Image: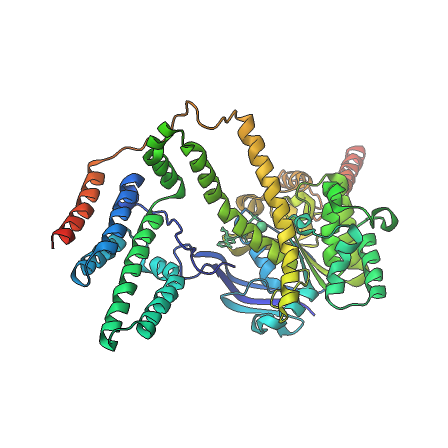
Length: 252
Length: 292
Ligand SMILES: Nc1ncnc2c1ncn2[C@@H]1O[C@H](COP(=O)(O)OP(=O)(O)OP(=O)(O)O)[C@@H](O)[C@H]1O
Ligand SMILES: [Mg+2]
């Protein structure tokens, strides 16, 4: 069983952030990431930290979500910081400072992406991206196809995880032991999961292709959308506030 | 030895926003040699229940005692032994097939347990016979080229080759035709008679359970809502319907006859038995008409 919530999983909800247009959330996140990178330590970075923490609270997806999905990344941050302390050439006090500096930035950047992913469903995220990238269509860039591939992959990943778990369980009840001590044997046992999984995946891909074709899907065409994305005053406020924070840090 | 379930509760993804209580406070004894049918709406916790019994899932609370051992206390690296005793056939077991021919596929389990070539051969043969797969005809066939019902039976034979003492089947009849179902009924009955295998079958259709089971359990919202003998169905038509399960037609007919005041024996299992009871009743009616 997959015990933790997956990294960057969408948590359905109805907070202010959930209701924003995906485009403004993407723009906001980009500003936060760029701003954090270019901010001066510690005051400016601190301002960004405060901003993302407030956003985290506004997202109403629960502290546990951030904690659980950040856990694997916390190791990364800690290791990076550890090497910074160990290998940098400055004095010890300064080294700690530098480590904290780096760790903090990484934390803010990851956290802001978490806010985005946690409050935006994959579907609205991709349709927002498509809208934002649509100017590229003028230079014949296959935006629609690219986004379709992204959407399908995002849609199918949870299914594969489910298939994986289910087949693994089915093989476990046939007495296959995935906790085997010898690594070679363990890998060999995983073949019994991989083969059925591949078969199911191919079958699913074929089914999907048939289904799309029977609905006359043709890639980019005169396609309309059920939910038309629309900026609301809140979106302008959101971008305005985050942009404002950025401007303040630049001015500082 | 019976299976004893004492106060079992299972919660998926405990402590996350996706937390979901699948089973709550289940108390149950399953006697040896019993064939137990489990029904319930989608999401009522049937599959969860089966997976708890063979140690694939661990309950959040409660004890599950199989052969005098509390399997909830068995450490993870020894739990495989429990799975051998309590064989679980998943819904669509044909999905798990991965070998290149039927013999190898069924032999995989016993071989993996370290059983020698000769005994494995015996086991594969028995498992194929039990599932109605003729050995000579099927042993070299490629699983891909079998029909859906045949694949299903290979999937079941995979588990039978482990010689389990308890057999758990999750929707074994889904998407099978009458013939396919009949073959599986036969295997279950034969196993039960020759080896005394205790069997639990989950199905969405009560009609499918009636020919094999001798006890019926209905789950709803993770709790046991009804626990009766199979020949008592006609006595509980109202309760069964209230739980969102549609009862077999012949039981319903008997129920309404009885309700109309007909003095008829409603404790039956199959359609044939129901027909006999009705015929018997009509017979007494004729006698009454004659004498009256
Ligand atoms: N891996 C899981 N993670 C979270 N929730 C789960 C998981 N598996 C099952 N559930 C939930 O637990 C409940 C019981 O599921 P279960 O699979 O036991 O139902 P079921 O009675 O077998 O249903 P069906 O008839 O559809 O097979 C359902 O509400 C389901 O959504
Ligand atoms: Mg189920």
